[in-house]
Structures are given as structure tokens and as C-alpha cells.
Amino acid sequence: MYEALINFLRSFSAQYPLPWALLVMAVISGAGLLLYGFWELTLRGASRFLGGPSSRAGAPPASDRPRQ
Amino acid sequence: MLFPNADVVVNPALLALLGLIVGALGGFFGVGGGFLITGGLLVFGVPEIYAIGTGLTLIMGSSIINTLKHRGLGHVDFRLGLLMIAGTLPGVLLAERLNSSLEAAGRVGNVIPYVYVVVLLALSSFLIYDYLKTRRASASRPPGTGEAVSTAGLTRRVQALRIPPHSIKLPGRPALSTYIALPVSRIERISVFVPILVGFGIGFFAGLLGAGGGFILMPVLVFVLGISTTVAIGTDLFQVIITGSWGTLLYALGNNVDPLMALIILTAASAGSQIGTTATRYVDAGRIRILYGITVLSGALAIGTGQLAKTSPSLAFLSAIDDWLLLGIPGLMCLIITGLMLRAARRRRPASGESL
View: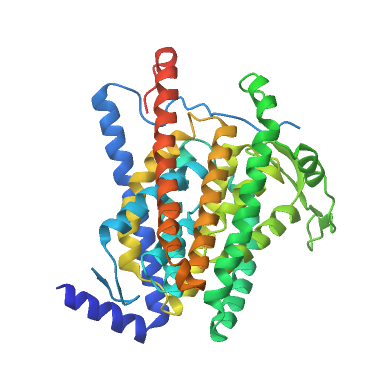
């Protein structure tokens, strides 16, 4: 399985540069969105379980603009 | 574990540790973490061009996560980010051409680390200077009355810059002003060419150094454009998505990216970014900037000692110091950030009932 993956990655990247580049971008962007969703759900679930408001609620910024 | 595209064996646990640190610092400082990722991958023995390409790919992924998180906190000025992107793309393209020429001439391995060291040293020195100069003013200011920065005069002048053309005439439509308001950044009026030029400069650095450019952009937004640190962090991350994507495309076309390596680091980085982004709600801006300055300084020293270690066999022992500086100090910084966040959250919670 791992060998097959290695062979695919090597051959596809060498033979098809543009589809390869787009595939890399799609996989990493998709993974980023999935991981963001996963953590949002996990933290909201944890927050609800612990009885507090969700992580976005009532979030005053720690600071504001530079002094002019 | 073998990473087939880069053709190198690296321990995935080390990559995960690097990802955790990069994610936490990225969320907290608003940087993609390129100087850490590329430097870290070089320490792990990844070939230079793959370290840069994979670094940019990871920057793209981790910036997506961090931007979405900061958007929820109201820290992203999309209008400003889009304007900067208009300048960033040609900047990255120009730098990538320059990088390819240097690589063809066999100079890429020599040039990049030295440029890195100089830029990081200059940046960290300025951040430390600014902190020392403004800390009394910051301490005496009541909460919510603004950040004290040493370049307030410069930010006023930059915001007031008048760059022609002042309007663009479109057929059949009234003239379109080239000055806009940026309410999220609390800028009443600024020429659109200012953010575009800033974006171009950042894009050029990003492409040249294999970084997202966030490590320069965040201080530029604060100290040159006069934007608050938290909005600078969020907007910076949004802009870094585009820089990282463009860089990823260019490097992946040349088959200089290892996606398997990037995926492992990204998964760990997503966990770290939860800590970093949440901490920006609790730690004051002055502290964020000085911690950033120290982190950047450690990056500069790490890359500098790494280069020194290569110059002579008698200096080879420096490579161990290099590894510690590169990963140890940012790792320590993650612990400090977590500690500051927990302390501040504990102080606030009784009054507001707020949870992390």
C-alpha cells in the first residue's frame, strides 16, 4: 500500500506537472478546511460539555489601534 | 519514514512537533511560519528547494485554518487583504524567477540563508527597540485607548500619502476615486496604491525566501500602516493564504513539494493554531510584539549559526546549537503563550463568565 502510494506520487508528479500542482493545492486546502471544521466542532462540543459559551462568544480584542 | 518526492527519510514525530510549534506561533503572531518551517526542514535534512516548496505548501494550509479562526474573532480586514494581494502576486512571480535563476547558477543554497539572517536580525532588533521605547507609554495607557508604537508619525504620513492617479475614469461612469476607507482597520482614507505597493514588496520577499511573507507583513501593517496588532495578525494571515497558494503552485509545478510531509505537519499545526489564535484574545499587543521579536531573533541566530557550522569542520558543533535555537526557543515560546493565555483567562473569567 505504502509502496503503491510512493510510486504514484513519484510517477504522477513527474509526468503531469500542472494536474500534480493543482492536486497538491486541492489536497492541502481541503485538509486545512477539514481540520478547521474538526477543531471548531471539537472545541464547541467541549465548551458546551463544560457548560461555558462557545469559543466565539464575547471576545473583546486584547488591544486596539496604534496611538496616532 | 521515506518521503518520496523529496526523497529523504525524516522522523514523522519531529515533523509533528515542528507543526505544533508552527501552528501555535502562526495563530498567535499572524505569520505563516515560513522561517520556522523552512529552517526546521533544513535541520531535518530535507533538500533546500523541497524545504522551501513544502514550507510554502504548509503555509497555505495552516493560514487557511488560522484565518478562519481569526475571522470569527473579527480580526480580518478583507478589503485591505485583497488590495495587498493585487501587489503580492507579481512580487512572488518576480522572486520565483530570481530564485530559479539563482538555482540554475547553483547559488540558491548560499544566498537564501544569508538574506534570511539579515532580514530576521533587522526585524527582531526593531521589535525589541520598539518594545523598550514604548513599554512605559503602554503601561500607563488605560485599556481600550490604543496601542503605543514608536512609528506613530510614520503611520500618519503613510496614511496621508497622495499617489496619482487620484481617480480612474471609466467610460460611461463617474470617475472612481483611488482613495478608500478601511473601517475594520480604522483607517478613514488611504490611497489604494499604498497597500498594493506593500503587497508587492512582501510578495517579493515571500517568493525569494520561501516564506509566506507574514513575518514581515505583520510588523509592516502595525508600524507602517498603523493598524492594530490583532487586525494586522488576522489580515496578514488572509494575505498569506494567497502568497502561499501562489508559491505552492509555482513550486509544485517544478515538482519541488512533498505533499505527504506537508500533510503531517499541517495536521499537527491545526492543533497548535487553536492555542495561538485563542491566545490573541487574552494577551496584550505589546507582549505579542516583544515575544514575536524574540522568536524572530532566535530564528536569525539559528540560521546564522547553521551557516557558520558549514563553513569549517571545527565549527561543526554549532549545528547542535542551531537545532536547539530553531526549535527550542519557539517551543519555549509556545509554553509562554499558553501560560499567559491561561493566566489572563483565569483573571477575566470571574467577571465575564467567559470560557476559552
